[in-house]
Image (cartoon, rainbow, N blue to C red):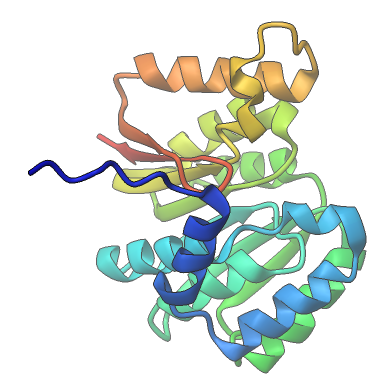
Length: 222
């Protein structure tokens, strides 16, 4: 007797995953709630499942030198920094003082301020500074979740900075499905499409685009 195919309700599936799919700390829950009060911009925060995956990757790799491009209110910063050992350092790059004021409050609550160095300003300038100061091939991990129109620039700079075997994770690479819209000519969508195509042919990395939340691409430098 054949089993009937189960018709999945996406909303019910999401609720199921949220109920048993990860462990979210009370501090992260508080931060998620406060971020939600910001209104529409709160969508820029990563999903809890993404945070759990990032945390696991940091722990598996025993990473100690990490960069985050785009901090927002600090959710991903906490996931990265909490997974690192005591001697770990996260360089958190962000242009908005308003959002990072919230982030710093929660970093302090999580006792992570000793692991996180916030650098306010233009991320490209900061990355160029790392390169100029001979930090190429010295980082374990980079998380990119910032201005979509600059994604290829962020990727190239990050690839110079991570060591062989290091990981680059890029958020929003499905971009609400807009990557399939041939008529969407916005700079952000075109940038993400270009990056996805570029990475698929880039022999310097192994990669995998996973359909978690709004899409994440994991790249390992060869």
